[in-house]
Length: 527
Image 1 (cartoon, rainbow, N blue to C red):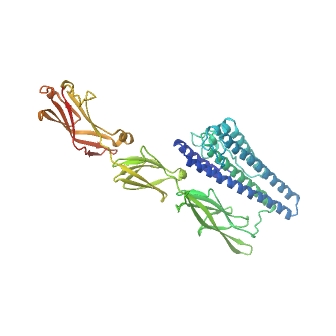
Image 2: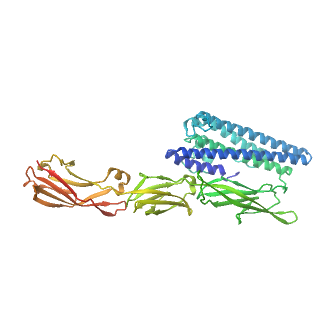
Image 3: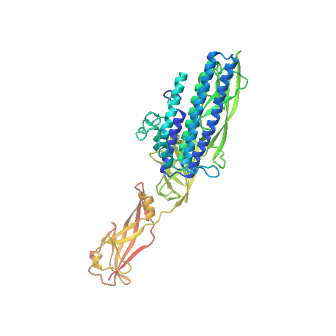
């Protein structure tokens, strides 16, 4: 994590920030907040596990010093290790207390121990940003990293970065001007804030582990003793969405600079650097349980050459979980689509983050992929459409939509821009010019304006008296009827008859199709 490399936390926080931004724009649901609470709980379990491991490292140093006869220089190393452990414990206690403050100011917990203010943004921001708690935390974290760098001579980069220094955000003009406090806690629900602090705690422990390893080497605490050796895998996360990459480091629990092991997962060789193997593969879907998790395993193998030239292989089955991706679909009308229309959908899977590059398959219609990731236009040709979403060749899920028929437009007849009175009638002198139009259904037009383009392409207008025509029929092809020729023969009691012969619709592609309107006749009495 030292140097210019991006740390696991920086990658996770960057992904989490993008997901948070999108989710806040969509109004975060309780289900999503529960996922953040679950992530925080998982991180806190890791903190507990890593803390125990680091204590065991200190105990190993003490034992090594004792076995070597408590030599003066070794005792100094042991005391230094205890100081590092004490500094780490104090910093972790401070961060845990800060999380308790966030829980308290956002409403505390209910009788079952569940956080009441998981969605609260304002009170957390007030504590962490306005009251300066985040700035205080940033200083403590970065002072801790500087302390380790000075005391070990190794490189420990600052833990809490401002936007301009963070590799994830330094090139983003919307974020690189923000400091650590605003970058981490501004416009974020309290549940996400807790997860961010817990992730920082895991980094503190990772830094401590590095420092203790440096100290252990000075007294031989890292000597390999093959009394109890198992392969260890340190994943970035035990939970990974289907279609995303599973990433982890594989290493031997008791390593030695004199040993160059070979490593495999499921029989496949993996690259090994500095005694650690890099495990990376694309997670595939499985049989999900009621909570949306699929349990999976892979076989880890580490082979080392022992003194005397003898090869020994150690194996272990590593367990991980694949989560069922949550597919979010945004549309003007997502519950049902319109037949033979270009229904535009925005299909997103926040859990995949930057790894999301979907492809689509449609049953009961066709689809056209949009210019941006997740955008797709569905053109249904049956009563039901199924949209299957894939990422990297893996099926993420299938969504089913009902299909509505296109509502027929309403035929309107106006004179001078005002509707004619078909019940009470009009004076012939006011009907010198009629406008005949097909007006789309209001809901359909608001959902799919590009598909709601109608035009009356043919109509006949007749002046009738009783059961016989007096003038006409006049053929109209441009939606406007000039009734000047009807003015002379027209008498009160006559009627103007408008018969619609043909209506056409232009769709989102610009193609024109006929609209079956049935018999459409408008009659306007003259008075």
